[in-house]
Amino acid sequence: MQAVFKRELRAYFLSPLGYIFLSIFLLITGIFFTTGNLISGNSRYLSFLGSILFIFIFIVPLLTMRLLSDEKQKKTDQLLLTSPLGIPEIVVGKFLAALTFFCIGLAVTFLYALVIALHGELDLWETLGGYIGFILLGGTFISVGLFISGLTENQITAAITSFAALLAMWLVNILQNAVPSDAASGLVFSGLMVAAAALWFYLITRNRIVSAALLVLGAAIVFLIHFLDPEFYVGLIGKILSWFSLIDRYRRFSTGIVSLQDTVYYLSFMIFFLYLTVRTLEKRRWN
Amino acid sequence: MIRGENLTKRYGKHCALDAVNFSVRQGEILGFLGPNGAGKSTVMNIITGYLSATEGDVWINDLNVLEHPREVKKCIGYLPEKPPLYPDMTVREYLRFVAEIKGIKKKAFEAEREKIQELVKIGDVRDRLIGNLSKGYQQRVGLAQALIGSPPLLILDEPTVGLDPKQILEIRNLIRSLGKEHTIILSSHILPEVSAVCGRVLIINKGRIVASDSPENLSQRLMGTGKIMLRLSGEESRARSVLEKLEGLNRLSCTGSSEEGSIDFLIEAEKETDIRERIFFACAENGLPILMMRPVDMSLEDIFLHLTTDEKLKELE
Image (tube, rainbow over all chains, first blue to last red; front, top):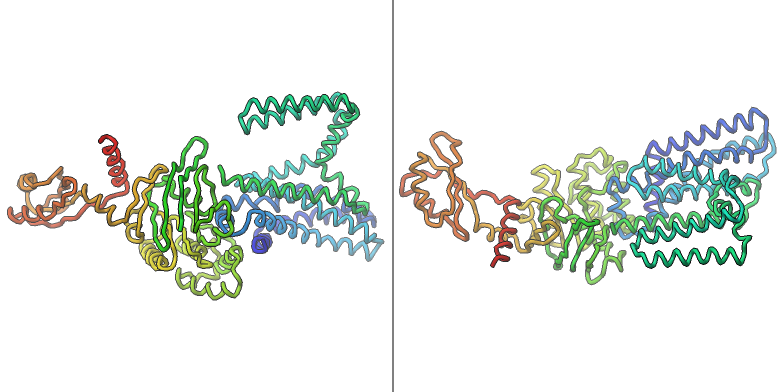
């Protein structure tokens, strides 16, 4: 794991990609800091941190796009996968390298905090909470990007798909308030989910009987819940969408609250996507 | 040392390997011979655990690759068809990286590196970026990578492809000397290469093993249909009348004249007969000087034709 980590981190400093990431990140944060804090004389550092959040959607794909796709294209994955290293070690090594480089970029913004601390009032704990939130959020973004990079051997495809996925997770926030919240729509939504699950099961197993049984069973459960607890379906769509809303959870960090619930959410999100990445690499051997 | 049982690999409906069985003994140099797309690389990728077989198992020292990946992969050094090199690293950095992922201690590697650099002759490029090296040097760095940790089993997929003739000879000699300490499987689509290095040859075609024998026996079997290229000084009609009377002649064709006053023939003898002495005496008696006589090299295509038609004959019988 260490060897992969060291190689990847080094590669960021030797390829233009790492510097493009850093320069875009620092340019945009610099503009925000100058206009939002320096010129307007605002000493609230957290408002700055909150405003640079969305930049990650654009630049994290730059960090993750080549991690796995490039190995496949250059066939160097043959070296890694036939070495005594396990696939989890390779994936975690690459993930940690990207996260470390991300944190290096983040560390440069301490300079801005220093400026505020010298010339205004900096709430240390609030700022610390904001940065911890950034690291966790960055980690989840990187895990998504890493997973997508493992699906393709083209870096550009990986970058664009990761960008779209992260953007979708951001849009979920907006969508959440727009979706219908009454019980009927929740019921229909559940029915559709059950049908989709049965269809997916049929597509991978080609077993009609079991798929049909699954569909019937799922529909029965949906109706049963409807009769036992009609309140369950109120606002269900919004609730489910909010599970994917990574950014919404950041708001609490930016008020200086590091809650266990949100930390666990981010960590489990990362672990889930790292696990998916390992599975896709393992699966590739079989087709 | 290695046993492949009933290996089958399907990509959708396409069958890349069809129930292949083979075994390799300790200390053997085994060659996989076959045209492009025959399934050589697939077999190698399955042995090294890069791919998994749809059916069948590979056992290395009685360990299954899928059940004990770490132990098995530790004893294999693999040079894939395209050497797995990072162009943004120098040779030195790359070799250190490979040693690290193979879990080799720093001190042990320092001593070993000198030896490997000496063996594959990459000492003078060790501080250059791999991306800037020529194909020949890249191939050697790939070989060096496989040798790190001195694994008992070396798997080399077309190790001489893209090298110039001098380098090819060097690498062949290197492989032969490595064969004293390692068990080696190598693949090639060039017959002389395999026969020069390997103790045993497996011929693969369309995912099946069509022949398995020592190179000597294989070429002996092939001698039966050996063609001979003959150049005589003299006129065509007279030479033809002499040659046509030869015992054991199967076919005679004139391929024209490439030297003034001489005539070229392509002679095909009957199966399992060596016709060369008879040609010599017949020509000597009739005063036809032989300017050149050489067996026509069997190309891989000929061998396949030969082997597949042989099998068809057996089926008919």
